[in-house]
Image 1 (cartoon, rainbow, N blue to C red):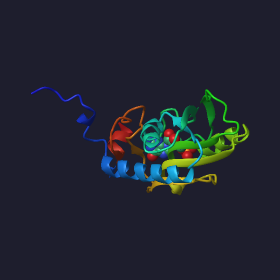
Image 2: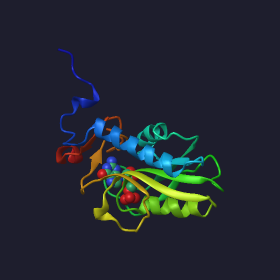
Image 3: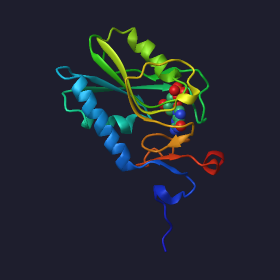
Image 4: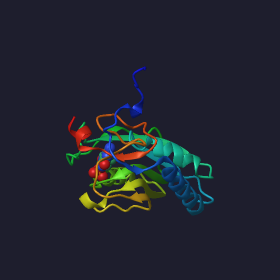
Length: 187
Ligand code: 5GP
């Protein structure tokens, strides 16, 4: 028998938290809600790289409006599972946000430091409106209060991977979200 080199070959990834159909359903609900809230406007959806790229790609297709997209990247984590508290801009936006209805798209809110930093940064550039959508919200480690307008799922305090979320740059291509096992975290 041939060896299995697929993404599922690592059986120790961890327990399933959200399967692909549950994520798809919720993303479509968020898309419908955003479509209703932004009717008559052209929202500008900014994904925070890299983690939010898959959520962003699915969300924009669930929004029935003429919209535009951009990408921003910030760093602080390196390969560690917890934030150092320091956030720095790695890739800036390509376009100006002045006068636009900006919707910041995040994968997961943990301490809140990343979104807090980006909201302050973008807020000073004169957008017409500035809102936040996050797929996952992990409120147990919040260090700063962040206004969140749309939340996909509230989740307990676990380190999760899949659907864009990584551990040491792996597991982003899992179609579901899993709680990373102790074995995988340590190994
Ligand atoms: P915050 O600045 O809110 O603490 O963290 C936001 C960022 O931390 C996320 O964009 C993500 O990159 C990372 N992060 C926080 N919790 C998790 C988690 O459970 N799994 C993964 N893969 N990344 C996380």
